[in-house]
Amino acid sequence: MKCNHCNADIAPGAQFCPVCGNQVSNTFVNNESLSWGMKILSFFIPIVGIVYYFMKKNEAPKKAKDALQFGLAGLVLNIIWFLGF
Image (cartoon, rainbow, N blue to C red; front, top):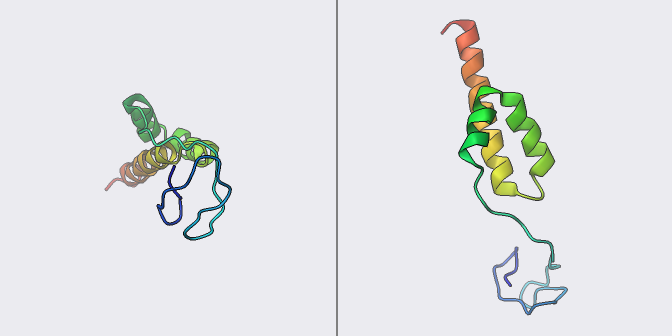
């Protein structure tokens, strides 16, 4: 197991990092990428990506960030298209 703060090796079950003293979180963080279907949905319906970000930002930060990025990109392009540029 690795420390989230200093990336030092930590013994399983430890409460604190032996190097920096940071409290160890024993929760699993999902670092998988967002599926392409969800990316496309977030792009064409930006509110879906933005809401997904706020719902999943602690459980799956990479997926949440991907959804937010595609949602914001879709939102910006929709605004540009709406304004007629």
